[in-house]
Length: 201
Image 1 (cartoon, rainbow, N blue to C red):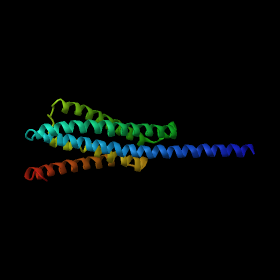
Image 2 (cartoon, rainbow, N blue to C red):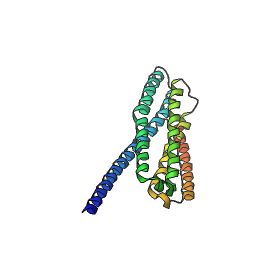
Image 3 (cartoon, rainbow, N blue to C red):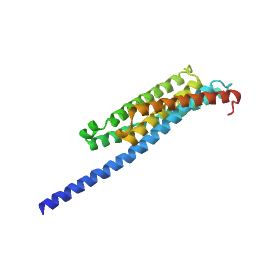
């Protein structure tokens, strides 16, 4: 009887832990999606912010003020909370998995490296907001378009790691990501040529 009660208590505990894990995993995905959405939107605004400097007055000043406001809000209301939610839920899931699981899964080590790099990218975006507000428009619109694709690289790499895990051939995946980056640059250059012929495109 005591043994059955012990087994029953252990099953309940494992069930509760499993439900908690699924909850944190769901919130982790929500945070991840919102984080990338915020970064894509933020850097796209940097593109338009830079292009607005080529307009005549008073349109330039009106758009500049609006972009300052939008960039700060997107960073503060979307990017930061989403980043914190992603990190918090991810670290809780790692804790629930345990140290032995973490040591045995090298894909997670690489995923954490990408997440740290993505966090640094976001902090760089924060510095960029400050620089743009100070009137530093030294980076051109085309360069911003290329930098806007950086989160796409992170998204591809992290998604591959999360789906394939230890079955992923890291060398082959790296070559694939490099090839994808080349395609992105070629696409951006092709779009620039189209825009030069037709600014409304």
